[in-house]
Image (cartoon, rainbow, N blue to C red):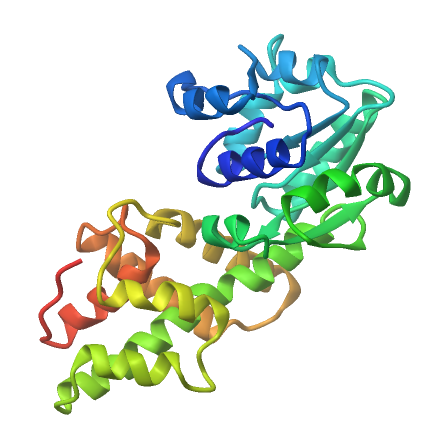
Length: 290
């Protein structure tokens, strides 16, 4: 595993529990110490991970982070070759993963485009969805590894299709969170308590699984963001750019994106994107304490 952040670390724990031998890399080794204690081997470079692995999973922040772990003498590309499978699980632009695929294929290795839908909680509960694009033969080989990470694994097409599907799902996170926030604030300013309004919404037909586990952040924000405003806005920008390319209007995505900008303007960029509620509350004259 290259990248041992919130999601990468959760993936490693699932793989260790499934009795896989796991070697991992992270720029900051201290973040890997709990995983090392649980049995993960640590590699000093991305290249060393690839040298010691048959299937390499990568979960990093963005296009630039992928370049940082893949290029150069110590990068992953330097050790890829025939028989190895590189599973790219980050949220990137479709164009970036297609360009990266050409570089991986030039080494003789196979690339799978395999982003995920879910959170750390979803991983821990064994409910993660993994959407895979790429060669069917490589998918068949890597599928048992992916099933150990999340039980819902589906090959949906070719390289780039996984990223497109991920973007199509992720744009809805902020849109849903903003709509829920509007409903809670309408109820609250009408005299219904925030907690009761949340209880009613969470028990109603509009409560998606995401709203059910992230909606309670309206009442108490987590100290550590599960998915912060800046990261969520990155995904919204990917969606808006793809919509521009394909001539698909995305009006609710655009509105939610502007509210994420407002959240950053209020200094909430490092907060979980559920802080959209507190952003809207501040604009509504309602006390907001994220």
